[in-house]
Amino acid sequence: MKTLITFALVALALSFTTPMVVAESESPLLIQEDVQLDRTKVRYGNVSKFDTEGTEVVGTIRSTEVYEQIPAYQTIQKEGLEPDSARYTKLIRQATKSYKAALEDVAKDKSFVLIVEEGGISGYAHVTDATPDIISAL
Image (cartoon, rainbow, N blue to C red; front, side):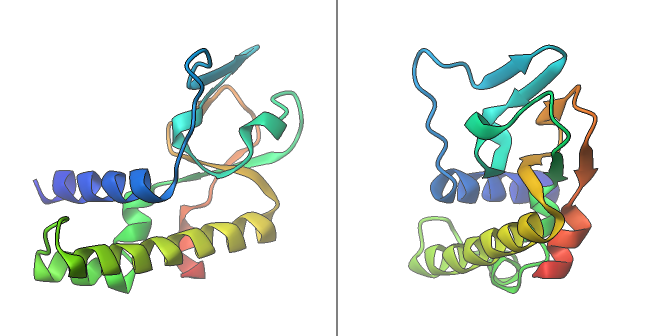
């Protein structure tokens, strides 16, 4: 149950801080050849510049694991803060700022063209798990 609540809180935080705009006529899935990419799971990078036939490296992330390592998020968990409280809002913004900074640092350091939530891309040969590096970058 704790894992489900943690996942729900991380999803809520990401929905407020990582806007994903998909036009009505545009599918959230990018499908080219055998590559499938769920645009709603992209956490870093520009999907429109992603070449599915290229050799660029895509990183995957397990955001819940990353958030669980961020001190501000740990405080939210420890204190059992409600999402509608001012303290929760302040801490989740701090946690998300740390999350985004770590993503950007690792993406630049490892030359990731995209960082996608685990399970958000399939059929692409150049994918690596970036979660441990992102946690280290915190």
